[in-house]
Image (cartoon, rainbow, N blue to C red):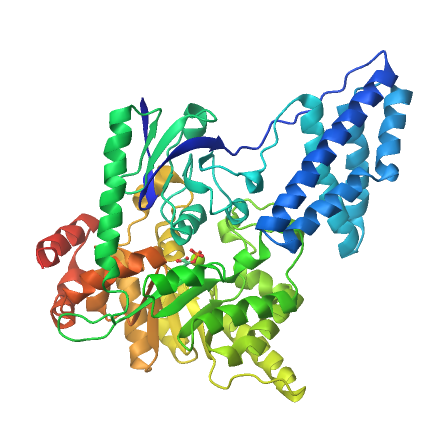
Length: 572
Ligand code: PEP
Ligand code: MG
């Protein structure tokens, strides 16, 4: 037995075999060969096996993931049958007497470069197909396994350096029982996805990929952050018991599922959930969510090879609004960048992606992408209670410009006779310190704020949220953060506006009494945190919590704040 320590990112215990999801090493070297005919045969054999594999993946994708995903593999199959690509590879093997993988790499690179340079979306997609297919064929030529996460068909725990949101989007929820990664913190997107998929996860173990082999039996304890490799029978039993206890605790919380969230002194607080896909709404309702406080729409754009159309987006937004049956749904416009990449947009690599060209900055520049999303949202607005907010706003002029574009699109739709709701609130995320500091200015122009503490803390403390080495600086209770939050809440209330929080802090047991006392109106969290939070809030008095506000804001360190909360609230 071996044990790794990481950060518990999603509660629960999972026990299953390990499945390593890793980028294979496909380094190709040029080699001279004597027998080109045999080499061509080897190439043809690799094409043949790749085709069989893709047929199987396509079938599986069609059954499990739908036509859209299956179409991606049909396109790959077409590439594998295209003589325009295959013949030049064979010719090169024969004329230059080089190995098949090298001839393929040279030929594919030439096509990819040529197609990518064209100002034509269709050709750019073909370049992406060629790149993917080349990877698969090269893997076969080199004898290196290419992982196919969408093909997993038995219960597994994923082991990876990191899971990007698009990797996560492709995982089959039925079979993936948990995951453990080398990097990441509580607010990295892999952790957030695990919570919305309700699967146990441990991130930031530093060496899971070094230590765990495929098919090792693994225990992931998302409560304590432990990963146990090849456990003994007794350990398996002990963790099964822990898993059952956790389920029993969940059943206890579940008793509050149809209850409103009311504090001990009778104040209603709104408990909302964060979602990434329309499928997540099921978990929101099962966990008694009173609203969707953050719909991260970027997941609609991921795990695919082109932008979603207006129609596809309209369907997704309409589904969420309808399923929520008139409860508020706060949709955040596209927040791409940082750890959320869209390879098909082919944005240049940046030195500091979290501080770079992302979210609203990109949307204001690439307006067609933004306007398409806004039209889809506006058209869906009549199916429920829609609120729209913009991510990563740094300046008032960004907010004004985004809002003006939204109103322009609304006007155009109305002029064309399309129904659009008249009561859509327009708000913004507060996740850049500059906006918190002058929240009084913003409060005059927004309908609401939603505080994104995952980024607000990252930017205030200058500590990358993906880097486990600086994860000690993720300090939600640091007085600097609490004072910024106070500025936002006070400024909003002065203008009669409401304030939510959709960063992970909103569901944190220590933070909840603090935020209640500071006057936060809406708490939006992972669906699985809602019932524990409701239980906790029912035991707290808002008036009492508010009476400590001044004292808490006068404290000087995180430790002092945590001590105070533990002493004052936890015996309740
Ligand atoms: C945040 O930054 O707190 C937030 C909710 O947005 P995301 O985690 O998607 O960056
Ligand atoms: Mg953010």
